[in-house]
Image (cartoon, rainbow, N blue to C red; front, top):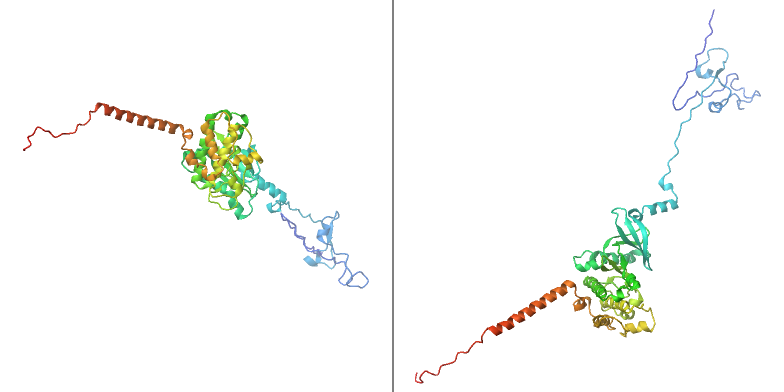
Length: 418
């Protein structure tokens, strides 16, 4: 009895990531060349089955493996086999790259990481002028409070950038000197130009301004404090002028108060005293006629006039005019009455507001006046006067107790023959 030969079973493929199926073949129930039964060999064969197309079908996949494993019988055998579904690989969602972010997101991110917002926290707005805004800020690094001035104007080109940095350079030089006069200039800490091309300057935070004291009316009746203000501002001007700079924007809003000391600040218009050509104008109420007429031979005398007319506003208690006949009179030397003001102080103010710039005294000369000496200098002068008076008294006493020197005379008792 002969046992029919049984073809071997196809192997089973088991992979973790995918399943590789044997190539699909045409069934051998039709011979090659039969076509569609009409004798057309090129007609499509309906028995061709794709493994991928049958993976999702609910019926079992039927495929002929005769040609793949060899024909072991006279008749073609059809093998029925259910193929497993191809497993799907899990993929994570792609990461969002930074360069794919929108322009708005990039701008907000830049704002968040700007140096100003990263290092400081804005607590309040102190002042807002035509040139910039001053903020009261707290440092995130040391916890101290500072005043930060942010300019409204953006740097336009290299020349404009250098012009804006004149204020920073002047403050840096004046804050680094070992002179008592440096205490009367607002101390500079650091500066930078931000991403928006605006200049940021960090200085000491002062408690008040001279304008606040004028509005309160306290300094008008305090002659001692008026002399203190004049002396300390002259010390600041003397230091500035010694370094070849001029302020050109002296007014009550730019004179600050901290620890009972007056300090000059806001060097936004500072230039070299040898500058020739156009000069940026400040507040016309405090400017001298020299700047309007283009007389720049001695710009230091312009600072003297501005400080003098500031003192005039304090002692009179009246706001200065911005134009008109009174404006002209003040620059022509025709000053109004200054009631309840010592005559010495009135003379100082008149000298500082002299219409001829050459006749105005310098800051160093004004500081030698008796009324503007410091307490230590006054004590020193008093001690020197006492020493001089004691010396004169001692010399007078010596003259009384010392007999006068007698002159030797020739005796006439000797004979004439000898």
